[in-house]
Length: 374
Image 1 (cartoon, rainbow, N blue to C red):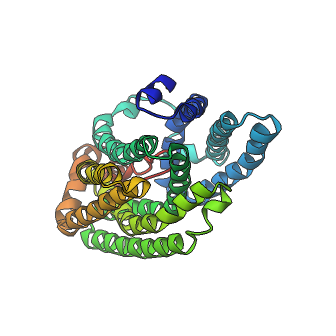
Image 2: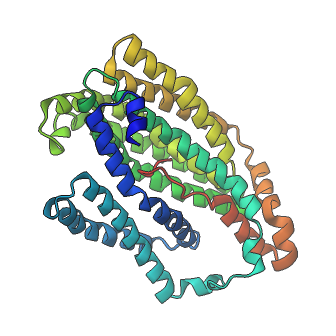
Image 3: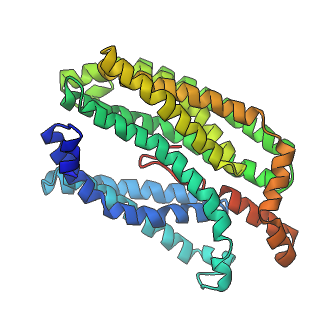
């Protein structure tokens, strides 16, 4: 990783630290491959409170582990990465323990493998892959912006400030993300039950709440702009950079919160390809050119990169609302049944067919960015 980062023009010190963190984080990829399906498995059965309890316990355990690895053992950045890996491992073990001891697995036929377990993967993958692409397109853009920070006037300060700002937007994102999951599940359930009016009402209510979350997030970013970075560092350059960009971050959230909810609507109505197309065009055909031109051509530097993000989020929100506003909900309800109706209704009846349709439509709803993005 270090030679690749140096080839991209990154500062040598930053490249060395990044390589250490990435290598120590590799086991987390395997854990995430199991953790996300387990979350979906529980959420699709409306088992939400245990998810929250297990996550809270994992975080509580994470704090002392992080302290021991970083401070007591002196592992530094490597210790931070290892603590994150252990936090996800603890969460996975807690969820599996809950499923086993509460007998949740027995409601869905247990863990026994059968030929039925390998059916319907084509339909599921056809929905899951576009959702994955949609997530990657947005979060790869953030990673590209971090690389571009290494080419600015003060790379160490801008990369550090970008880290603070990304963690800030990830913190804010918890609220629209949770709303998105709820809206996605509600929309998919209503469509699977053949109630398009209820699905439309759920989508509208969710997006309105998304706008409200965006307004609160924008106000929060503006109010804490002068003190927020001081909780992470005492470096005056980093504090000044963060303070100058936080208002722009707040404006970004005005678009990000409703568009995140819109992603949930599209997932719930089995249209992840639309979300992927919107993200591709918004972030790479609008956001990237604007960021590059403002940061390097007009010398807006760090602020220019975030103005590019603002342009991308605004474009994404507008396009998302246009797609949802033009939705024929009656046609979507019919399509949701057609996705699995011919297979399910012929074998296990209409009720089971509806449930399978709901799971298939919303089964990709838990694919998230590394910091849990849309």
